[in-house]
Image (tube, rainbow, N blue to C red; front, side, top):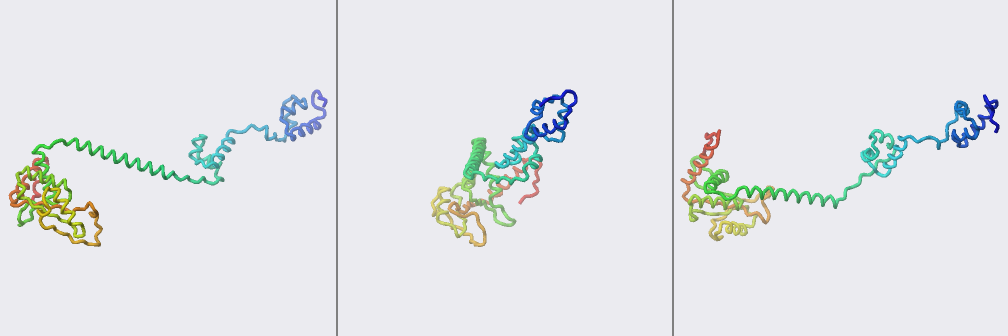
Length: 286
């Protein structure tokens, strides 16, 4: 085609050729070179109203991000995961993928979860055991006075108290063998001879009585025949008892003969401890 100098004499014919090239997919640069139209203003007039072909459009960053977000959503990613991957806001993600179905929440590996739970429980148990061992080591050996004071507090919290007008007597009842043994050590410290001690079992009638008697006799190092008559508690089937099973042995009752004066001394010792502590009230005495 012949290029005309100055203003193009056949502008409409040139435009028809330019439009035909444009619609066939040519870029602006290709049309310029083909038609030898190097004047930018003229070239723009020739292309007026004609959109560029899709392949010549420079993709926008947001378009690429949107496509990536949709692809990730279709793979089952959550909004949070997509946001962390692409660095865009959740509101933008919501606009881009709201027409897509929500991903199914994957169920955790129950086996791994159980292993993790078991491991955590074992760690907690080990920590508790270590704490108990450290506390045990903090006590060390007890001096006689320390055992004496511990025994006074033990009896006044767990032992029998004298009611008004009632006969005073030292009686200690407990289901914990260690409590019983500590109480007996305390009696040894006070000089209460073994021949003044009487033992008997208190237990529900539905329990294994013979087994409980054997258990307690062994704890205090006596023969079963040396136990006084066992005291049975009536079983109420409507009561939801927790003290049942093979480890249930009831309680052991330890009574001290000729102990009225000892009982008065224990009371005095207790209030002596209370009076030795700061800011105490001695008015609430039995």
